[in-house]
Length: 213
Image 1 (tube, rainbow, N blue to C red):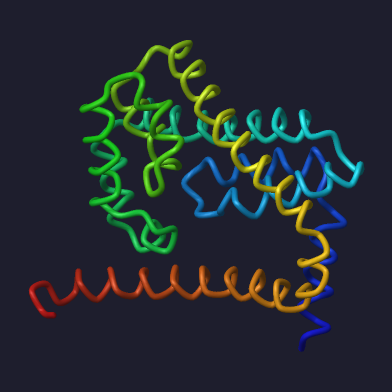
Image 2 (cartoon, rainbow, N blue to C red):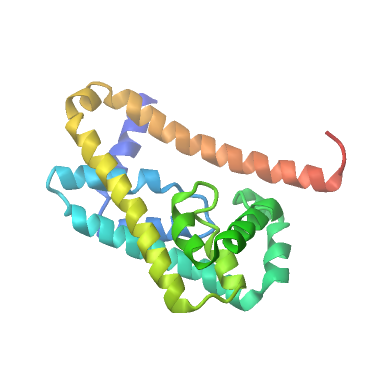
């Protein structure tokens, strides 16, 4: 089992490149729950070893985040508020950890902070992926959206890249606990999938049996 988990981790690390960074960060920035913390820090780790360029890691990561944000923005822009909230009530949306409350939370955040929320929101957990939706619903000017989203994503990716570089400075310690770290890495991914399934069934049961705790 340990060898299998280590094989998965090795495969992931060996396949990190600028293309995969862009694709994974685009997924992370859309409504699909995928943590950027398992994309940029490992890429920065490889950059610290000389396999990648740290500036390109940040650049492609930011470009990918912008692509994902575009997807949310234009979907909300053209579908409108009613359809977005209808989607938030579907079982599929719940499996993606999206519900009416999360969309409302991001929309209130956008209303409170205005255009700059697309910058601030990129740094706030539970708001990051969805902040592009209220921007689209409000039909925010595209150039403003691009500017603030790019800057917010850039700052976040710089923070994560610095974290990856710091981890490389602890290489001896990480090598010592490599197996444990590999298990934790894959285990967290598995827990995320299980949590998504649980939330999906929980939302369905709440809908079928309202008012029952």
